[in-house]
Image (cartoon, rainbow, N blue to C red; front, top):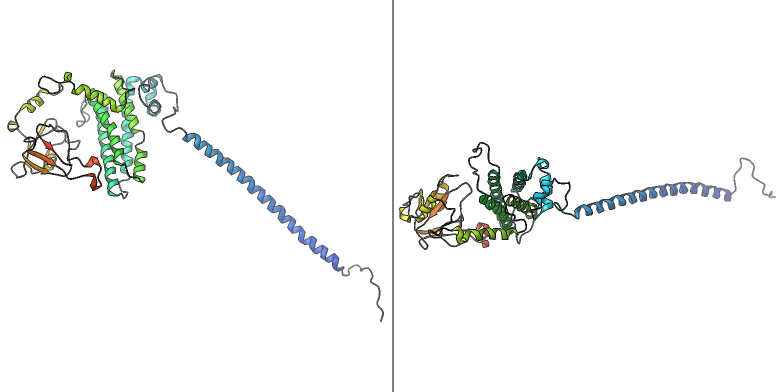
Length: 391
């Protein structure tokens, strides 16, 4: 049998093995090239997107840092009027003064005297808002110490709102003179006292949270931000309008300067009473205890109107226009935290003398209470008639 030589493949015949391998490799490489191009495009798009996002984030961070570099009230946002600039130049926080006044309607057309009224109104609005927002977290669970401090701040905010309301009614009297019978206008000295009290209340609130931390403290601090500064500015503007420029004197020293005048001899009369004391009060203080006609008598053995001082305070009328005398007979009265509220006005407590009429209280900071809540008696007392000890 013979073998023929290999001849070229005929058309339509089978291809050699090497040619088939090359064709298969080319067919496999084409999809790979397309996939590689696709991946390169996708990676390029992702990289470009990341670069853009990074640039935007960097811009935002820089913007936030620049905006956070100056706290609220340190930079004047708009150009003030000449009256606002002059009024705020007398304050300790002039930039905050300018910004807060510019935000109040009518300030741009107000003169310096009008700005006194506006500063009171604006400050009162800030305190009222702080009181409202602080009340909104009363439902939050708190430990006894935090709850005590929180309750202090609410009560102190209410006191400050009341003091600022009285101050506003004093600098802007009602047209009919009787729009609010419970708020009586006071003298310039009264207004100074009320503003100083509102300023002190902020310090007392902050002191109650010393040594504690948490969200309640942080939220109250945020809601009460700038309140002390606003009252300080209000006090400076009002003082300057009356001829007393206190802008350069620290707040604590202003109170000392004011008190020095009150306790000096030139403000006392021959009977060693303050000159501002009225005739009826002088006669009352000079009257022997046995001859005084008391409105309410407190006696532990039941021989009086009531048996406890707390009952006597509750029995006293609110917003009294005349002096209400509460006579506390001899004895030792152990009562928890006796408090005379803002509505109980014109109360006078009389006892049988030091060592005879004694009031004690057993509350202390050891009970997870603030110092504000541990006073045995929260009211001014004449030292010659009563003795308050403990607490």
